[in-house]
Length: 125
Image (cartoon, rainbow, N blue to C red; front, top):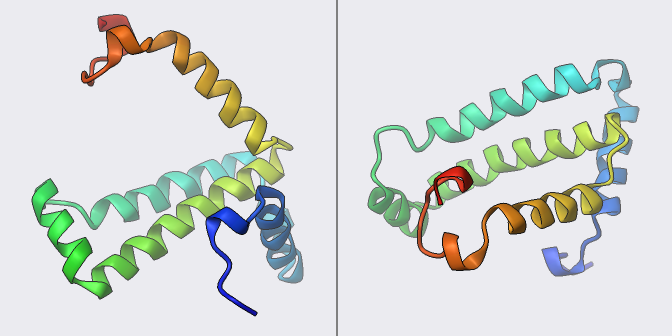
């Protein structure tokens, strides 16, 4: 079997893989929205910790030259993504729908003619 990439993957496939992993370990009892939201925040903190006290330039250089660092970043990001997908499963949310809906809202809040090239919040445009 060849390497499967993002372009070859469906969100539902990932949701099913994570459900199967969870169910084999009898962890559904722990996968409620509150606990999963906490897990997302904790794992996001672990990802963020990798960047502490480093400049954007330092990070770019490390991501390009330090394979162990890049692997650690990938592992922490995977933890965040996995818990987000687990949250969607537990809360019965369709990821495709909620992402598209949020993007449509953000498109209205951040019109290109006002938001292009600025990091200002929508109420400061």
